[in-house]
Length: 637
Ligand code: PRX
Image 1 (tube, rainbow, N blue to C red):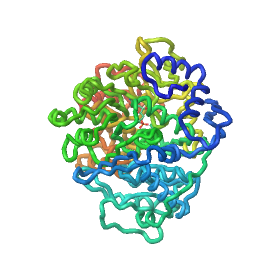
Image 2 (cartoon, rainbow, N blue to C red; image 1 turned 45 degrees about the vertical axis):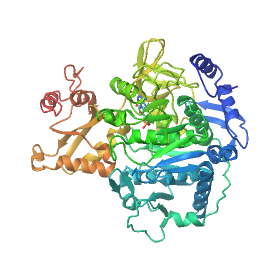
Image 3 (cartoon, helix red, strand yellow; image 1 turned 60 degrees about the vertical axis):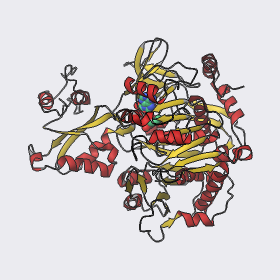
Image 4 (cartoon, rainbow, N blue to C red; image 1 turned 30 degrees about the vertical axis):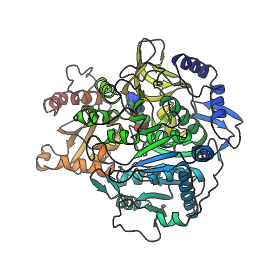
């Protein structure tokens, strides 16, 4: 037996040891026993991190949607696959059974086919958290089209960049979305984006808010009439294990976003295996992840991982504060949620609110609590443990990334003893390494360094879409023969890992990965701005917030530009989205630079974090005098 479901610590160690000694055998047994393949693989693994090239289950044929849906129909067809909880609590929740999901996905897949979408075509999905989003992604997977989901909070220009980068032929969107008490006009964002994307010839529009929108003739169509006419059966396309399943963009510290490409076979095995173990999911449980499907967390742990395991997964359209700060707990009580997975930023925001919101709800159904997206601070961890879990629910602090496809380091409930702020131990099959400044691996305990992975795992991204060199440069060049995550971590005296944060110029704000370079590019478009530098600083709810240091073209110019700060944030909203807005903007006369012209962000980070007692070595600065001036005028004194 492959020990698909780990139940105690001893078993974890056994399984882990086996997964490291015989990784191919380990992943072969899991694949064999728990998934539906139409043809078996010829080879479990082939890899070479120097190229880098990684292939899992080569030669195998499958369709992930058969694993997510079809194979459950015989004995679980009437079980609930998706519970859709609308933004407005007065609107009734939808319970979508596996039978119904099958029908909807097949119909949608036929619509795509009828519109000329074929295997290998890229389809951009820009939808709010409504059932059509899950159905659309599964419909793409059913016919072998590659979905590229763009979080519906991104601006039109961010959307256009992503559509162009992967040459999407079609966009699937809606007339709008509900978000708390607001409505958002998604369709006009798509219209603006498509002005720059002439290759997109079809836009399918789901109706959600019944707003009065314009359909562009020949290009836009309402989705529902097409679905009504479509056949209910759609044979799944047979895919090679290494065929692309989806592209999902993530910010880099420089340049345009990277389209991480995930493949059918390995991603299926990895998302399913990790879901089962990390959440200790049992048949009949109701599982809820509060992420948006526009992020990797939603891909792997709202849709694919749960459905492959025949789980009931909750999809929530709204926000934690609407109609009040008790909404999450309302939903837990209403649907008797057993596993609850959210982000530290949400926990911190809710912890600030009246405890009454929690105490007035029955949360006794909860069995496992999860967190993801950024380091969780000790206070938030305890609040979550004491108040939400009532000290009865193991907390799984899960470390992973868009690039890794699934959870990498995490406790396993009832197996791994938890410690606040520690992601604890690597999951089976994952071989972490910590690297020192010289590029050597730090062996043993009580060490701290850059977090790498030494051996491939099935869920890892295979490339950056259209730019394999960038994939190599970003992840496989810093250390020989290792995947570099971009994070720092420490390993304590028992081998537990604690993630210390990003080691590059990516800042995580409210759990969202933001590269500083694209934000600076947006600011620099302002006519009064000469140069800018962005850094993160600690924020008690968002984890980090953004601080901008901006040089204006003429000294004193900003006095005439009362609105420059506002306009800068407006530009950022237009180029990226409101999530990237700056909390603080300080106008400066210069930025600390090295002799080679590089901005010394380390110093700016310290100033923004009110930590100016020891600025470290500033002797290589070209303009040391500017540092004092920046400190004196700091907005974070
Ligand atoms: O810095 C790490 C942080 O989030 C980054 C990955 O972001 P993204 O690709 O958007 O995926 C987020 C959801 C998987 C990582 O490089 N991160 C993620 N989980 C944790 C974390 N930092 C600390 N603890 C975590 N549990």
